[in-house]
Image (cartoon, rainbow, N blue to C red; front, side, top):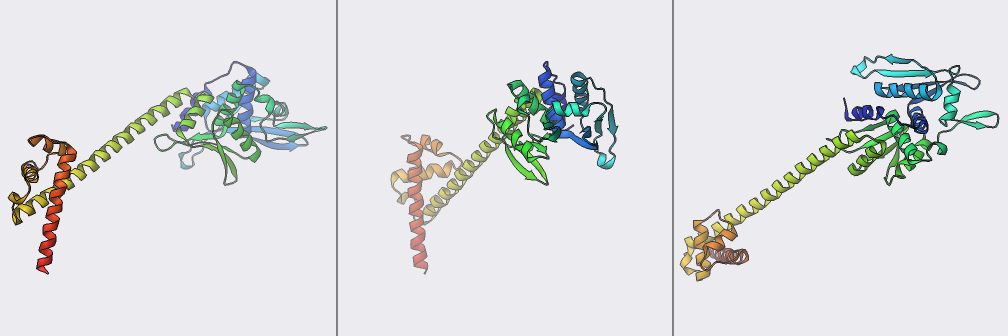
Length: 321
């Protein structure tokens, strides 16, 4: 299964003790994955669809516990492109769909009639535990999370702009910075930063998914750190090799033109040592001299030799022309 499906399976096993949290979670599930079918004057059937069997069992249990309604879970096999099965529950008007829709805040009484509201009912998210329950239900009903090996991205997809804005504000009450965007007629609430994805998983209770994600983040960080170190060492080694080659060319040019004996004693000494120890570092070259000198002293002398070689080459070029 995907990381997203594994996370939903974990969340489906969380059953709150209080009925208020169950109702709030069910409200989010219905809002995200439910559809209404008009069957007559103020008569609606409620259909809830999900691809996750654990989520289907959870919805079935909540409806049974909260409303004493027994509904069938029907399975639709999707053979196209080997997609997952779809699990569907139907609550008809006769079974009490209107009662459920009122309780979860989708039906709002207006005078002697009812209207459909798309906002998150304030009375359902009064406490922290109920806020967490709503986000958990919203995740189960219409969210996905990318495989953390690739990127960090968690999003909720809803059909209502009002609901997406309320959902964003509810998430951000937990000191997160969720954003919204419209995509192909849907409204998406998303989080992209790794730390915030971890925080949201913690808020909704997906602790196993959180640990799995953190392990992958640590592995990726270690791999990136190792790559940076290797790249840095490779770059430094390349610089050292290039500098050594320049120094050798300069020393050999001086030797083959005017001879190393024409150099001042300190420069002649470092030139001879460099000729004998071509792979040595500046620090190692300094320790081979008598008396010893530091890296900066060795570097200064070798630069002087390179300058002398350049002047000799310049004079030769002038004579040749």
